Image 1 (tube, rainbow, N blue to C red):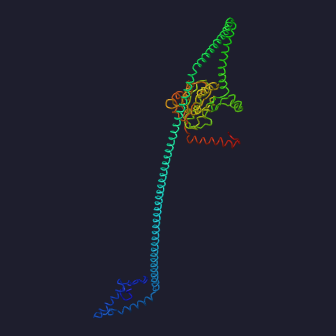
Image 2: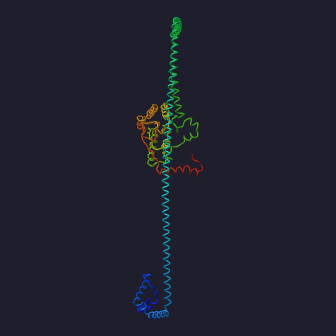
Length: 508
């Protein structure tokens, strides 16, 4: 703005630039006043006055410049620009004020957040302290409860010990009382017996002559009676024997009669047993056999339709309806073919051992193998043999006698065979069970054309070494995998869901 006062006239600012505000002095109001006072004092003491350096021509130049500025076409624009600059600075000031207020608000929010965080930490610490206090109080309560239980237990044990001691003392007193009473009774009995014996001895001594005379008379009478009986029996038997010897026909008839009587008794005794065993083998089944496909008279009378169906059943595939692992199915298929050929050629059957977890198809395949080979099957369990005791040997022989009378051949399936076929050297078994095991070993010592033995067990290592000697082949039935389980589910769904739904009949 110095150009208004005539300073730097050559370097005038362009008319379109905003008007610059003067910068206040750094000293402030107090400093200016002090300088003015110093200047007045200096002027008053003989220095030059302040107004002596004032140039009045500057005011003239300023007024002239103001008039020129007013006449200039850019004067209004410069004024508007100055106003715009002033409003812009005011807006900047207001924005800074707002920023300052926002900072203050942010600081307040931060302070509130910090206070809330401190409160949360305080609450968490208090909660943790409460929990620790509760745990400690719970531990103390449990300890007190355990101490109370221990004291009660000790008191109960002490009371029980006292009661036992009291009972023992009472028992000892009662025993001593009983012994004393028994001793007194024994002494009284001995004294009474001694008195009785003494009285009897005295009486016998006094009546000795009379008793001897009675004994002599009785002995003489008995001797005479015996001699008379002997004489009478001898005369009768002698006369009869003389008459019998003198007649040869009587001797022949008597010998023939005795011979026929002995023969009849022997024939009736053994013939009845043979006939009973034959009838039992043909008409019934042994008590150890739980299930069998063999037809007998009683089952035919009881279930005629079912028996008739069995007569017209054709041999079927041994693995029909049975789902197993592929390698096991191949192995069992070869066994089925070999068994069928053995039946057809009337050869010796091979004994098998099926082992594996329960429910893996051992019994099902054994029955299917018998039907495929044209044989009858008989199912027995080892658990029925153990409680039979002494009758186990007879029952075991009846099973094999019954199996040998079959014309088609019998597949004898023994489930849970390890129940009575255990090792004799290690297991503590009774003599009856040992005898039953020996009977089983005796009847299975050689291969047979009449029956085929199939054992099943979950623990094949428990068998006696003699049983292992009689097994020709071992087959392991393992648990099904995912594929076999899927096939089982599909078969069950088709058999019990799809077929009844499509045919309208229920499968049994």
